[in-house]
Length: 301
Picture 1 (spheres, helix red, strand yellow):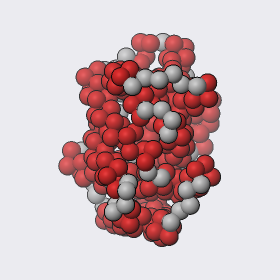
Picture 2 (cartoon, rainbow, N blue to C red):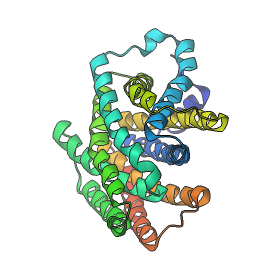
Picture 3 (tube, rainbow, N blue to C red):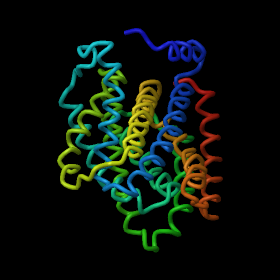
Picture 4 (spheres, helix red, strand yellow):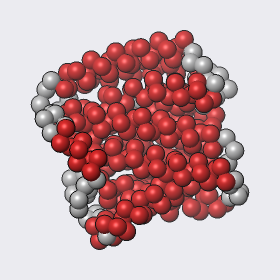
């Protein structure tokens, strides 16, 4: 299948990059897109039930992909492992249920910070399941980054939103399992197949929960979910490409940069002023991220 001209241009310009550097670049792009997605969905979920928001977010993600699928041919998107695609969809849906319930009750920066626990589970799972090499730089950077997350999150755990913070924290290992399964699927499936079937399976699994609480969205909300579908599909495409380019544990370190984007977006869209703990934790996280990115870029896997 011919690649989009922009993708061909990007591939040409980055041909000399190491696999680790390409993986980091895809991961950074995914982070920016996911923070924009989180901000959009949080705004929508303030007015609609979380289960309906979850369904519509993935429904529009599926609709965004359909023109591409129809143009290139459905047969090119039929998976080699349908069972694996449905298993990943079930895992991702379970994590999303917890995530969407907690989303409107927690600031965007804190939502992102709690999500940073997912790489811890991913790194351990990748080491155990895929036998990926775990150099000391990756462990150290992740440990420092997790310490920064604790600086951000710990002061809020005793407040009114503590229960929702724990619920969102509980979604982290479930998302980690889904992402590890994604890594396994990249060995036999293309990024396009994985993204399409994630949108399809999550939409199917979320539909019964959405129908139970359904209310008619406004025109602006329909437009918001269309934007969310575009952002989500693009973000998952970049994430899947990062997994295919390099070890999953090598790409997870830059996920901590998402705290910077989410703090800025939360301030601009929701007037969420970052606390001192968020700023301090962000500095710790960014320091670890930039250091490990430099180390990974100078080493060939």
